[in-house]
Length: 161
Ligand code: COA
Figure 1: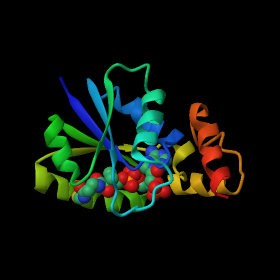
Figure 2 (figure 1 turned 90 degrees about the vertical axis):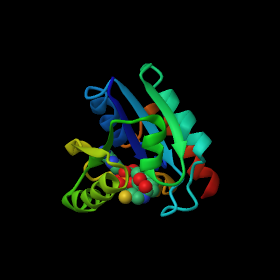
Figure 3 (figure 1 turned 45 degrees about the horizontal axis):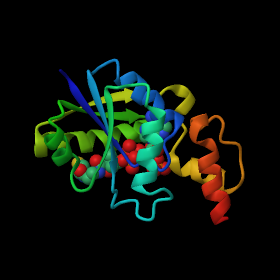
């Protein structure tokens, strides 16, 4: 049984993340979505618990998906759940440069390979920070976040603006 780990910050989850999740499911038997306590991105807009609740709701139709969180190295998380590979989405050439460095480091540190899925062209220009900016300026999120969490994202930014 092949187990894959899809790590990320998911602040908030986007349609781009959902596209990667659906496509990754075709490549493995079990998919772990791992929400990182990301030291490079302090002060997230959503707590780990809120992101976990959103991702669980968004993937509830798939019994072979589990949502977890982790702090520290992604390779340690992968080891803990005995993952066979990591999944990462690649949107642009600069993503590839950055992600290939991470993939090399992760292979050195944990002997684990990374599978890159090229983002669907609809989401190649998308990022969670762009979504947060649009939400904070009152823009329409329909094309960026799953409709199930759209109100939640809007409300969060209405509350802080
Ligand atoms: N479609 C649309 N947007 C996408 C996307 C897709 N397919 N894939 C990624 N994105 C967005 C994300 O929302 C994120 O947006 P943001 O920067 O505005 O928040 C951005 O692209 C970058 O995504 P990603 O590269 O996946 O970064 P991340 O911040 O979500 O997650 C970790 C990075 C947590 C996976 C990585 O830092 C990590 O593994 N950390 C653990 C510590 C560690 O092990 N470090 C050593 C590694 S060698």
